[in-house]
Length: 472
Ligand code: GLU
Image (cartoon, rainbow, N blue to C red; front, side, top):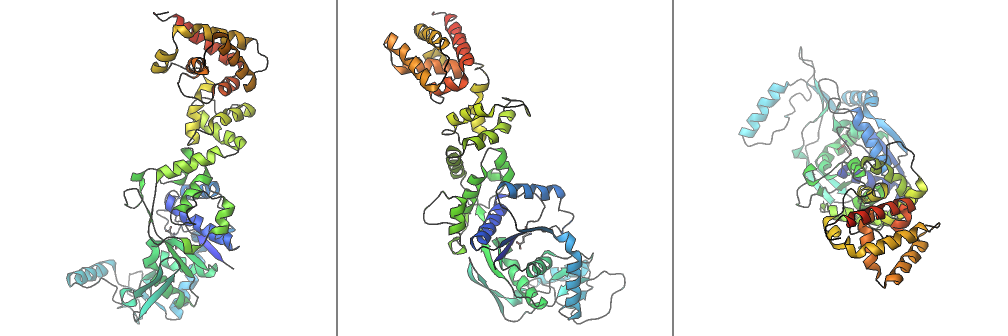
């Protein structure tokens, strides 16, 4: 059975690269009806924080990446690592090294001066007996003969000469185990069949393979995913905009849009761009992960988000919109919102919003009357000539009990007929009067959703505003 894991180090938020690694693992597990394990790699206590763990979990849940086991925490598994280190010592596959950091540094310098690769020279190998006052590290006896071949499921065959490896440290002098050690112990004991991770770890893989052998475990299969580049082809970083997954939530992106976007950063299925989760689970395979780095394109993410908003379920969008409305100051946080009405608002805006944040901003006119009229719109459309049209419209609207879109359309048509004018001669002044702007959703729908009271009071206000103009 396929078993994969996502193993974040909680030293910061979950960034796009990490999220994509998690998604690939999750899809691989779901496609193969296997298991997806979450493991928090928190042995570096000085850099790991509880906040970061919570943030990572929240981001994974938001993306819909449910795990079947865990979250395990490596700091809760220290006894296991200790035992495994002990076993390696007893089997003489590892040894205590008493070289001091100063000594190592001196030798390193000498090696560099002599044009040699700085490596641990193995001088404590085979030695017994402690050195007074020194806490030793534990090193693995590395086989420096021959080469290590990685049959990477993405990169293909990668060959490392073992002479490049040295007896690397498994346990530091303070007793804490190193990344390379714990990752192998955990992957082996947790029965991980496929290690899918960023290719920044490729150089660790030959070391880890030696460690599997020393521990007597079968190495898993490896798949190293190329990194994500920014539009300028430099490694994706904060310079290119938000890299934290939850920052995208704050900006009004839908999780399915970010999910879809991230999968396509490196994986493809023909030239299809939009995928449902079910399709992704059905189609996902490591063979279709590209060998070269993917380039992050924020416009594409925006395009995908617009698609998922346009096709999203109105009720869900309305719920998701509430905090954005609060942030825009349009509703009070925690106050009750008429969700039925909000759904109508969303229906008028979902075709034209790229993010929920933008949708909230565009919804502002439903919640408060325009503070000012767009100056161009004011000049062009709120002219004395339109006064009779607007006054007639107010009179007609006042008579309505049914404020449905259809009824409003009929009402507009009556006014148009009466004056022999086209819709735009009434709709544009009306739009500026009601929204302050020259663009908005369809005029009948906004009048209907806004409701009788707001519509009439805003039209009255615009009428007064026109009458106060010097040319009137
Ligand atoms: N904890 C490592 C990281 O966050 C992942 C190691 C791995 O996947 O093997 O980069």
